[in-house]
Image 1 (cartoon, rainbow, N blue to C red):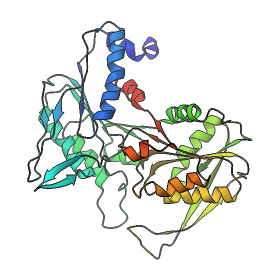
Image 2: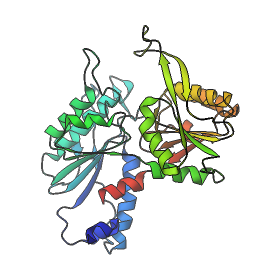
Image 3: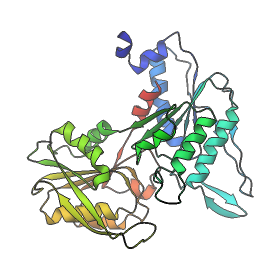
Image 4: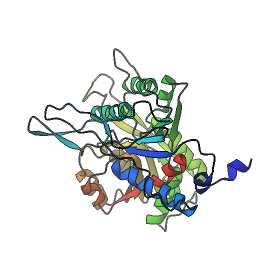
Length: 357
């Protein structure tokens, strides 16, 4: 029972550690890896390991002009407990391909991960992968003759010796069924999100008469239900009515958002989802809530990617429809997004450091 009371610092002080700790960052995941490393180094120094400067093992994935690549680990990993960070959604990483600048796709990031695992060459004590944005996570089920990208990728990682996968807010966590004998942690940064909300909006009241959670669709009900149950407030939801006779950009277009729930009049609203891609659905819901005389509206997505740009959200903020957008630092955020006053970043690096410790 005493083991349950140990904090992260205590694990660095234990004399029976079975392996030395090592962190490896795939190209594009260096920022998050360094933040996590800073917490781990601080905890190690607090228990007397003053000679520890970093747990990061230098690595690289250089590419030839033809586009071919290789993984390179620049220090020994023999017997280490390795944690490899990868950000499949980081589109800012570029390389030269026959003289043209090319951006890494999620497929390229996954292959870089596989290359670095190969470079370790089976000499590590254990390999864990920290992949906050799950590769192929939106292609998680088969409707007709379709690939099962996420499940197949997880099986590939298992087959090359990965013991643990740590991801955050998976689009559908049931993909873990593809690898039932491998450790798969789907983490929800709920506490970090609420802490950030209180920091940036100190006058927010979580009383049920003043605050309400609204799910943007039926798929996001579980995460919004958790917020509502923790805070003891009402929960509403929107149902996406689609035109199933038409396919536009690979999906059935939304005809209307139908609201189900108690009155939102005069209440601050919090909407949580796993991803803001184009943001079209989130904005449609915000405008619908304003028609119902909602108070301030705060939106959150674990992965705020804004694939269609920021202009529509700029307008919504200027019109007083959206009062703030929250997103984590678990994937790449563009400098333009970080420069917006309405965007508030949720730092999850310390939470990841707790997992490693």
